[in-house]
Length: 308
Figure (cartoon, rainbow, N blue to C red):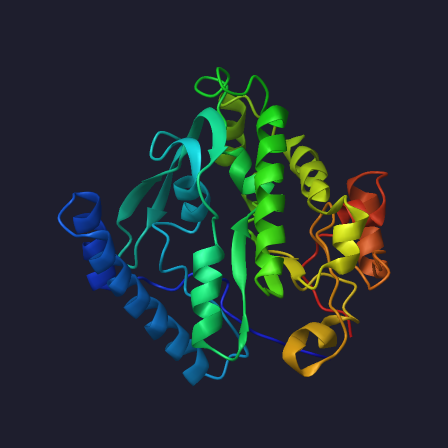
């Protein structure tokens, strides 16, 4: 049985970086000065991961104001703090409301979301570098029937643009040499919470359909067979990285030591596929699939377990 560990993506931002971002946004700090402090924070994040022995490292998402910040700050069309507020609690139990973005205009590409993150990371470590991108299901909650329909009449029209933007970013990351791309925050577990389900309904999103809507969109990341065959990126999902079809993982563990090309793509449930592009669900996942619907196991294989 094979085990691998790496950070999900983000690490706590140091106090000096949080303060620097506030000063920068207030016009009290120049872009050059802010970037120097960002670089320092990334260097410290890389050093921490290397010192504890991780083979896969990230930049700690130090350049983002939140884990989804790469989307909001690189793509125009979002109201940064105009969306659904989610309560979190700190280590002392105090509640903190975090406001999500909301799409209010047609999305327009401004710059690459993660190219700076990866190229800096690549130059600072000889370990495998991982980059995270938000899932279509996470991005779906940035649409609201009361605020977004002037730009996107339906959630599907909005998700189509999210997919195009994400595909463009994945292609650029692959061109830059990235071999590990994580599709982050699939939101599956959130659908078990009655309050969150009601929040979806209030905003015009059917919680019973959203998984299929966003899963179908995720499949579009890899519909081009040419790019799929030439891709050398391992695309995983944070919540289901350890799902079934585990045999090819050894290829991914340390790509720099292997001549084999890890040509993985994200499936509708973000499960791993084998090197022929076919899902390889175990008996347990097939049982889970049949309990959900008559869909194929590949559509419903989302358990977070290991296969020996």
